[in-house]
Image (cartoon, rainbow over all chains, first blue to last red; front, side, top):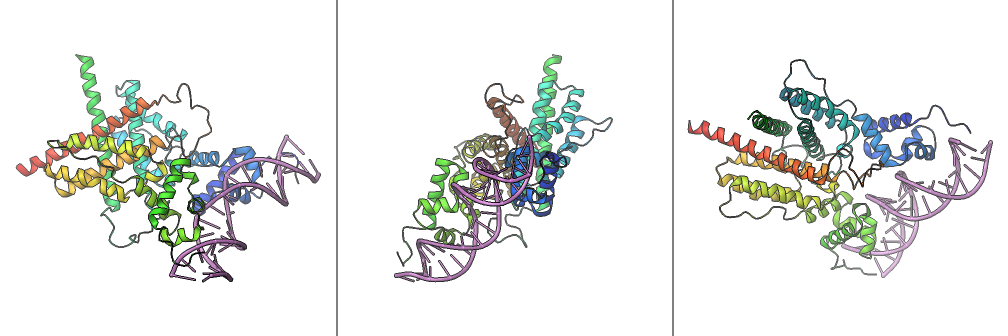
Length: 203
Length: 203
DNA sequence: ACCTGAACACCGTTCAAGT
DNA sequence: ACCTGAACACCGTTCAAGT
């Protein structure tokens, strides 16, 4: 019907439609066909603007996971911020489908790392050490949520032990405790290594 | 052609065929149709014996991930064994597709936990503490490998920075270091908490 | 009882037209 | 140039026969 490229249809509108379908019906309902149908067009323009389904899902994930990191407070130690940072990341990641979050070096993750790296550098960390520590916390958090969320949505497992007494005794409270313990151990370890390397320099 | 149920065709043979296809062509090539075609049958018997595709993939994962834990050595401290246990788990998990490993409470994981829990209990851990610590190390290891492997196979990402100077400076060596650091922090943290709770009891 | 062929309702992706 | 309809080569799953 139209010869000039539809000016209403840019990559952003396509990603927005995909996010709507994701929110309403879940990740499995997001297809090149369902997205184009929602926009009232054929799948071809989606391919020409986005590329393919992988690219679409990456774009969806980047939009869903924008601005993951909480703002830094004044007079906050790096350990305090690191604790808030991991907890906030976990809360945000849990809202997304676990299949979208398992991707290291996702743009959103690189962005989210920046404030934590900055805080650590202001607290005396060497650039390399700050980046490494931040990557450690990021991987640990993303990996934890992937496992935590991977229980229900993707593969339903068949076995009939959803409601009632839980299977191996893993309640949501257990999971919270496990996450807190995990992050505490990592942050304490990073702090200890940082102190010992500072001692090396002093000496 | 045959009326009696084929005695050569049990669930094991179906899973074995799926594993063969997985090894030869990757996870994406494993379908109810490709598996039944390899066995020379229609998809229907696969459904009647396995259930559905989720059940098939779970069975494949359980077979691929059997016997994950290394044997315990005599006169080995729990920290030494925990280090070997996480390293061996990582090596084994890396051989599988990351999409198959992200499932907490997978039967193979429960089995793999047993020897580590036993070693920790022999070293004075309370039952609950040993189970919790083991779960922590399991989740951390599985999550790490999921991230580590999730870079290449599932979504190829499009961006052209595979060969040559790597993107954000994440070499395989960096990844090895990160894993070692991660596990060391966790094991040290577990040891420290165990010592302090033992002190509470002594006092 | 247990199989097969065929079908249903989808996929991702591309091609050959149309304007 | 950019669209659409149609097609290709698949999926997971189920149904209606066949023996």
